[in-house]
Amino acid sequence: MKSLDEFSFYRKPFVEDFKLFPTAINIELTTFCNLRCIMCPKTAGVSRTPANKVISDEILAMIIRDVFPKISRIDLVGDGEILLELDKLERILQNAATYKIHVNGSTNAVLLSKNVAEKLITLGMSDLNISLDAANPETYKFIRKYDFDTVLANIRMLNDMKSYYKSLYPRLHVSMVGMSQNISELPALVDLAQRLHIESVTLQAMGEFEPVKDSSVYLHDKETGRKWLRKAQKEATEKNIRLELWPENQFEEFESHHTASTENASLNLRKDCFFPWDVPYFAADGSIRPCCAMPPMGYLSEQSFEKIWFGENYQRLRRDMLTSHPPENCVKCPGRGWIKIEPLASSLTDMTRKLPFGPGWFEPEISSDLMQYRWAKETADIFLKGTSNKILTLDIQNSKEPFAPYPLEIVIDDVQHYRINLSPRERRNLLLPINEPALELHKVTLKGQSWRPVDCIPGSSDTRYVTVKLYHAGLRGTPVETTFSNGIRLIAVAMEDKMKPDKPFNFDVFFYFPETISKPIRFFAHFIKKITPYPSINYYWETIRKKFMHNDLHFQVDGWLEPNKCIPEISLFTFQINHPETSSPGFYDVYMGLYDPHIGRFPVKTSEKPLRNNSILTGTVELLE
Image (cartoon, one colour):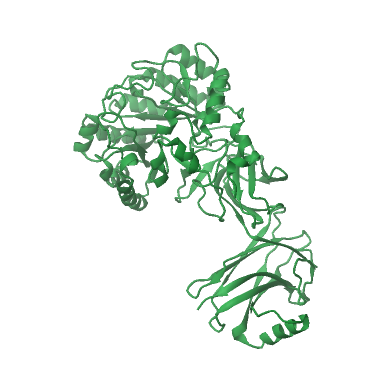
C-alpha cells in the first residue's frame, strides 16, 4: 500500500485550519511557587513562561468575558502554585459556576488550609490534582523539599471537610513524575491513593532539567518503567483506583525516537497532541500559547483572543504539528507522545494508538472498565485500510446529558451519509456497509454537536447534546452481495481460516432485512470437504451428493436470524461452531443459505456463485487435527 501522505483526501484535513473554538483552556494564575522540586525547570533556572508573574485583573476579566461563555473546562496549571493567588482562584470559580464550567486545579497542597478547603468545596471546584511524586516521607523530602506527613494531613482534612459539607467535590487525584528516584514507589502510591480516597493516580513522563539529568524513566529506562507499571496496574485493579499515563504510550519503544524528526518520517510518526486545536494556554504575562513550553502566539493586550486563535501563527503551527517534523519544542516535549500513522486493518482491536486521527479528536482516555476511547468534537475523521472488507464497525457511546439528542451523522468515503440517533448514555455497535470495498483507504467522518461532557458539574444545564465516545473502529467481512427470494440480503461474511480442536470457530454473517420480514428465519451452513476439479458439472454435483453419505466429509450448522429494524444498519449474527470430532482434517468449502422450516429453502436471486441447492459459496476453512 502506498504512503498515506499520497492520498489527497487524507492530507486535506491535515493542512486545513479548522475554525473551531476551543472547548477547554489552561490558565496560569502565577509563576511564583513556594517549593523548589528537583525536577522543576524553575529549580534549574529555566523559565518556560516569564518568571515571577501574576496574571493581571484586566487580563483575567478579558478571559472571563470573551472565553468563559464558550468553553466547558478550565485547567488551572503552570509553573506556579495556584493557592498563592486565592482571590483570583475564587474569582474564576465564581464565574465558572455561572457558566457551568468544569474547573480542575493542580497544587502541591502545602497551602491547603481549612479556609482554602472550604472555598474549594463551596465554590464548586470539580477536580483537584495533588502533585505527590512519592509514597514515602524520605523520597518526598528528597524530591519536593517539604514534609510528607503535613501534606497527607492536609488531604485528610480536605476529605473531612467534604464529608461535613456532604460534597463529592472536588474529586481528588495524585500524580507522579516518573524518574529513577521514585518509579519503584508507583504501586505504593496507588495503595496510598486508596487510603486517602483518591480517585486516580497519574504517572507523568519527565523531561530533563538539572539536577535530574539522565533520570527520566521515559527517556532512558522503559523496561523498568513497564515493570513497575505492571505492578501498579495490578494494585490499581484490586483497589479500584484509576491509573493513567501521561502521555499514554510513554513506554512504547517507538517513543525512543522522540528527538529524531528525520527518523520519525520513515516510521510514520506524528506528535499525538491536540492542544493547538483545542486547549490554549493563557500564561501569567497575558500571552496566548499552545502550551507552557511554546512561545507566544499573541498577547491579549494587543489582540482579541479570537484573532490570535484563528491567526496565522496558530495556523502555521497546526500545519507543522501534523507532519513528521513539528517544532523542536514539540519534538522534545514529554507531555505528549507520538502516534504511528498506520490505518487499522484488523477488526475491533484497540485502535486508540493505531488509527491516524485528523483534527477533531481528544487524547485517549481510560473508561471504568479499562477500555480506551477518544472524545469526538463537532467534526472528526479517521482513516481505515482494507480492500477486502465490506462492513464498517463503530463502537460509540453518547454522553450522559439527559436531553433529547441531536442525530450523529456518519460519512463514509465522502459519499455515504447516515444519521444515527443516540439516546443519552446509549452505547451502540454500529455496522454500516462500505459501498466501495476495493478502495485502498477509507475515510470515515463523524459530525454532530460533539463536545467534551460537562455532566459532572452539579446542576449543569449545558445545551450541547451529542458527546461521542469512540471505543473502536474497523473494517470487517468479505463482500458477498447476495439477495434471497424473501428480500433478505447477505452483505458479507467474516470467518477464521482455521478451525482448531481446542477452541470454538466463529462464523459471522452480515444481513440486511427488509421491513416486511417480522419473524425469525432459519440459517444453514454446509461445510463440505474440498474435492479436485471434475471434467463435467454433472459429475461435480454427483460427487457432492455422494459426499453427504459420509459424515467425515461434511457437517452442517443451523441457527435462527432475528430481524433487526435498525435500518440502514446491518444485522450481525455470530455462530460459534465446535470442532467436529467425526470429520477428517483438510480444507472445507462453506455453503450458506436461508430457509423456512414450513416453506423450504429461499432461492438465491442474485449472487456471484449461485448453487443448485439455493445456497452460496462463502469461503473455505481448514479443519486441523
